[in-house]
Image 1 (cartoon, helix red, strand yellow):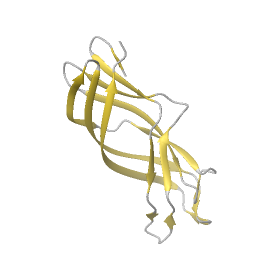
Image 2 (cartoon, helix red, strand yellow; image 1 turned 90 degrees about the vertical axis):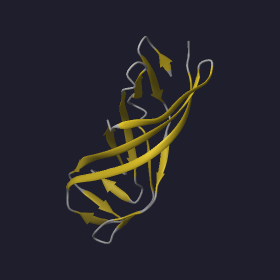
Image 3 (cartoon, helix red, strand yellow; image 1 turned 180 degrees about the vertical axis):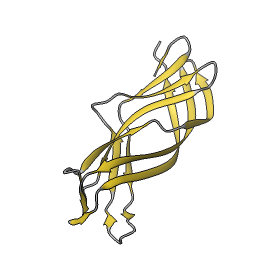
Image 4 (cartoon, rainbow, N blue to C red; image 1 turned 135 degrees about the horizontal axis):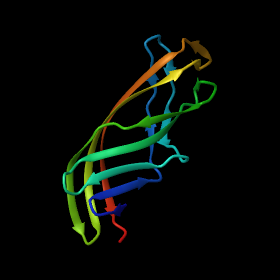
Length: 141
């Protein structure tokens, strides 16, 4: 995390989530997957210290080993979801803790895809998630 005259800017380098199996309406189940930051794109969270405005620009890769999405097990998904700070405290000199609530939704266009070897019709795949995260930040001066 760095601090400039008006913002705290958090540059995320590593976040990874496990996703439980998802049963699709047609009865096919996508086995457990992972969602991780895209290592080729910069993911940031910016907090305006004066107004409290929070903006984000995150870039994820969903990896679903039981699915083929546009020819690959992995697909990139951008994320500019709204986020809300539930708490923000200074815990020491240059140390802060914060709790953030995220409500994400997005879609990717699948030209072709399959799950467990079963071909599915192409189209927009819509996804959504809500999460609450607790973070401990150290500011570089």
